Amino acid sequence: MTRKILLLPGDGIGTEVCREARKIIDWLNNNRNTGFVLDEALLGGAAYDAHGTPFPKETLEKAIKSDAILLGAVGGPKWEGLDYSARPERGLLGIRKELELFANLRPAIVFDELADASTLKREIVAGLDILIVRELTGDLYFGTPRGVETLPDGTRRGVNTLVYTSPEVQRIARVAFDLAKKRGGKLCSVDKANVLEATEMWRQEVQKIGDEEYPEIELSHMYVDNAAMQLVRNPKQFDVMVTTNVFGDILSDCAAMLTGSLGMLPSASLGAKDTGKCNALYEPVHGSAPDIAGKDIANPIATILSLVMMLRYSFSLMAEADMVETAIKSVLAKDLRTADIMQPGMKKLGCSEMGDAIMKELDSAKAAGVKVA
Ligand SMILES: NC(=O)c1ccc[n+]([C@@H]2O[C@H](COP(=O)([O-])OP(=O)(O)OC[C@H]3O[C@@H](n4cnc5c(N)ncnc54)[C@H](O)[C@@H]3O)[C@@H](O)[C@H]2O)c1
Image (tube, rainbow, N blue to C red; front, top):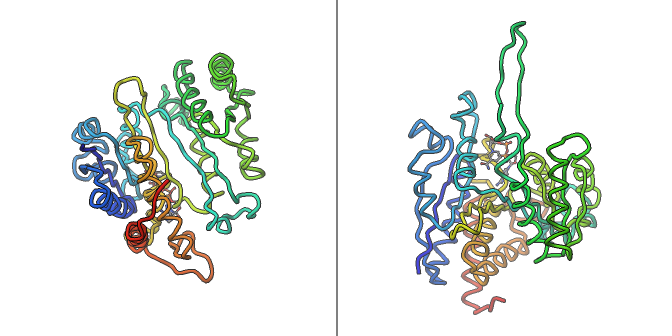
């Protein structure tokens, strides 16, 4: 059986962290007979440099043919002066749109070993396990009209449009309810229904789906400003949160800091299941980190955890997913850290050293014949 994975390393540290994930994929092929077939393509700034567009046709074609995609990150100062349509981030938005990846899953889990790395107190974050489900193809990032115009009096007017349709809200709500069902049975929908009509409609549609299809799920609603506050005050009150594209973008970065570092946060973006094939793209939450790119000091764990999500959601390789996750925990338990999660008295590793340390744990587990659940 072959499983086609497309690698899109992108820009900056994207290429560095993907290289480490690739080592794990090769290890799984060699030791677990997983049959992954890897292909690679350009996206973002690297694609713009080579083809004059951040999202080349060849990349889309390869993406459509693949079973799952692993992306590093795109962007960087080099491309900041370009027109918006040519910027690396448009490549990312483009692939999400083309593959209809409307559901972005962002877990925020605090590993016991890292509870002290958070800027919040240990008792607030220890044992945290929440999942933010962010709608990914609507809202201000895609709504029209958009742009900046110069008015007759010489002043400028910038416009973006917050738009959602009820089917768009219903499909993301169902994804979130289904996930809540498999987890703690609680869903909090986040909006700004008191001032934004589009999100008042969001609230009504989520409530309707809850009442009609998921009466067993404990549904609550929260304004986004309160949700931001509650996330740092008492994050463990949440199980699954579902929200719009823009609010999800901000809240998930906020949740990121609960876990200690952006370098620890994976994500999955999933398409509709009813098309016969579920498109899926896995990527770390962080960006291309131009400040540390090229130095081999980035934390590859968010990308490797994204690969773990791929093993679970796209390939149902639960034992292999558990193996890689356990290897990461073992490395952390041995006090090995990349710079972003470094603590006094621990040993600092570079990006490739961290990848190698995880591989070493996988080798040791195999040699010891460790059984996986
Ligand atoms: N999904 C994506 O591809 C994505 C997401 C966010 C930002 N971006 C792009 O990335 C570029 C930089 O954006 P930014 O600086 O706002 O966000 P960023 O996530 O790249 O970096 C924010 C901070 O976190 C650190 N950091 C991020 N990932 C890390 C890792 N794996 N290990 C250690 N430290 C890490 C960085 O060094 C930086 O100090 C911009 O061009 C932006 O548009 C891309």
